Image (cartoon, rainbow, N blue to C red):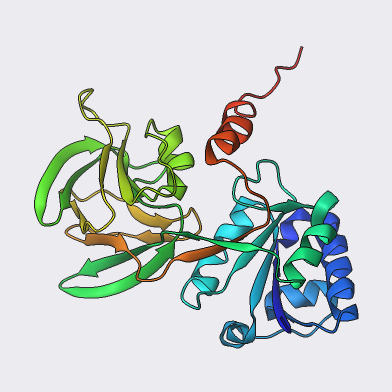
Length: 288
């Protein structure tokens, strides 16, 4: 392994910059070429590269939280580039290491002692007047929803060309098994083991008590039709991008052709992870 890309989140402040500098020194001392994106390299006083140059890398290090790792999807996903997450955040559901065990983990990775876990990705497209006007890639979920100040929306959700349901509410979440423990979970959706080939369709605040989440095969083609014109409607992918939607737009979501590769160093049961990260940490301590 000769070339490694490093993505970090400057919003973590001096902590992120300090760890990023230490990682650079550690990797370069071992003869590794480290690639930094130009808009992040400037925080370290380094020169960086554009996104196309990242294809030289054999590994991508994500330094931050789960959100930072999710931001690497559009970069690493199409390249099939393995991603190793180092957690600086609170939850760290997707990341593999933290600062305390970072160097021991990197030694194992550089020695080739790691596994790669493949996770399903979603490809979302906005179709307007028969043309694709925007395309997104995500690991957790695509969300068609209303803005903070807009009225509830009327949507029709189709699965493989068949109308599954029509409803009025705040929107719809189309989640992968990875995303089933994120926004979909908070909206009342089920937890899906990442090994299950399924997608979850979770209505957001539906005005129909009987409407519950649907679990469908991940080979399904999901279409969301806007039945009414509502200002502020948008498509978001992993919470990172908001694409404004117009009346009569159609959002098409399906599984992406390639999988997202997560570097794994420890054998951890998915169910233990859910219990430790979601259930035990889900509530915050009340202040007096």
